[in-house]
Length: 128
Image 1 (tube, rainbow, N blue to C red):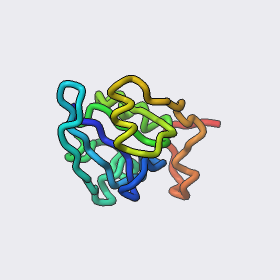
Image 2: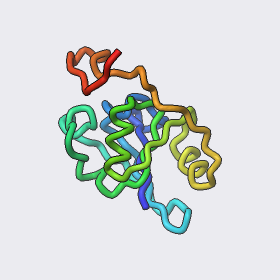
Image 3: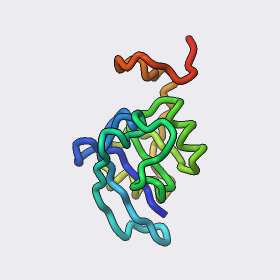
Image 4: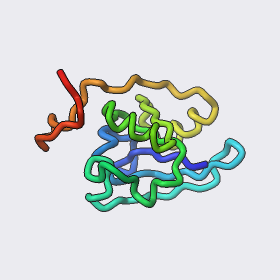
């Protein structure tokens, strides 16, 4: 099992999972962390830029932990077999360990988060 954590600054869990290009990837075996590596995606492989396919580095991920993500990405992850997790926890290691022990405080999906807010001028089926 693998857990990915959005960490654009490589220190804390960052927001905007769709725009994030740096992820800590944790290898999990028997409920324990057995490895951790930083993966940095090229711009065109961010979730926001690659609407239809997951970056190669994220295809084996089972869970994605982030500080925020829009409803569209949340749905895409679920359709790809990845469990989306949104949390206020800022420390990646603590978040993964808390998730593994079912103690991670979860936040709801940000249903107001639209791509158009970022100045890209396109929408993905959202309506007001």
